[in-house]
Image 1 (cartoon, rainbow, N blue to C red):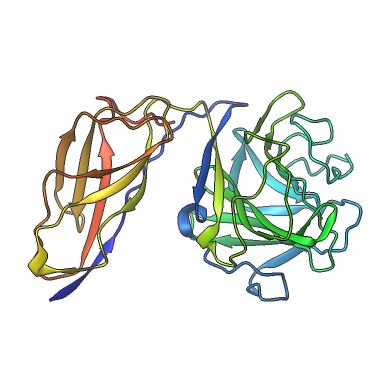
Image 2 (image 1 turned 90 degrees about the vertical axis):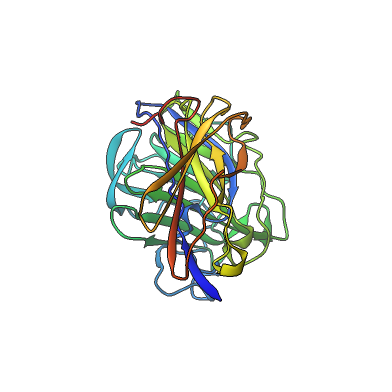
Length: 333
């Protein structure tokens, strides 16, 4: 007999909030949180009509969009921001009253005097093509929504036939910022990816201003990569769930099953021990200690619970999570 198992992985992330401090995580595959499943096409040329255009194409000289409202409470550098504007050269700023001209399409090391305070950037793209649009859409439900600012069918400077798709994503509650590398073809990009708090404080992806694409030409999220920027100093002990490695349909004759999940170490300390836990349909927690681990900072590992699961016929939610990292609690705000 085949029975469906619905898998839910509890994701736990902790970070301390401090003014003017961010850290970023190496690129991860897909879209952050999996909320955005829309295909990546030009506005009016295949993109879902639920997206809203805030700046049309044809901008041979960089310009700013009109100011836009942030659709939920969002803090940048631990300060609530309610509006933003975006340039056709790939820069989003919360300093909507700043009269600085839109940055050129030539990226530079940050901090830069060309960039306003309170900015996020995929600096080095251009909205010069006629169908180059900046469009927005909010995904998810409160209090876990994401607001996407999508550079749809943008152009690589100096090569009108080379196109590139990127998004800047603001996340509710966590205040996480994501930069998503989505799609490209026909050229090589050099960009600055990062955050500029002010004229003296900025955080950029290694390789800026010459960061290139990791994505391919696929119009789905299958070949996407994203960079995550988190507030606060990187904690010593922090772990995020990546996936639960159980099939959606299991045969009872094959029971009992290993409960296996992949985790990513988001802390600075190498994880050498942890308690692994699982719960079925919100029931009692099954906990076992794991020792002899060696999960370096920002590395991932697949861990198996020593206690197998032996279900009867039915539908199940399976939660898997880690606690007691290196004998201590997660570092939370």
